[in-house]
Length: 208
Image (cartoon, rainbow, N blue to C red; front, side):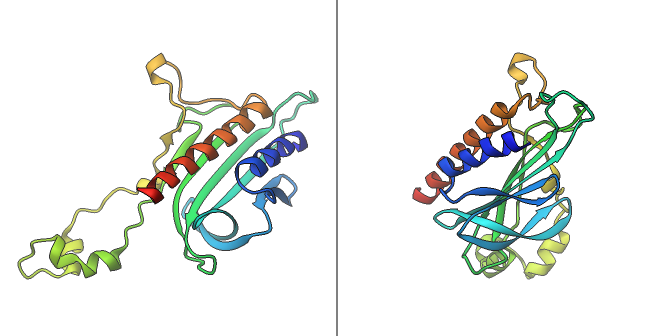
């Protein structure tokens, strides 16, 4: 485990901030930390957990959680079951209600499950109802209906937060969308790649 954490710490220092480090919160649970941190509500599995998020760039923050489940094996080369979760937030330093944008996860079970793709995205579609309400008349050609009547009569959307969007689905090659974390290098390369990808896209949206 320590070898994995060491490699991920180096990736964090290279791609996030020089002060980035994984803090050991419990026996097999590590969370991201650093000098420039703030609070945010992490929405995960229907729970709102107050977490410490690390500053990244602009007004973006991140929270990374890494949980290990050791395998009952005497082999030192045996990789434990790993549950990796990275959430991106946007907001001011003193705002606990930062907007959680999306989450990247890679669950590496002892016995791989095909229920959900691994790794995968979770996308948060929180709509700013206040802004929509203020612009309701301009957006909707209503005949006397209020904003509340409009959303009451509208069909209830599915909870897209629970949808697992595949990150590495290789369907074009007729391969599975469930991938195993074979060693620490695989996870470290993926961590670096996902950070580079997210930062590039967020900068594009900021500059657009």
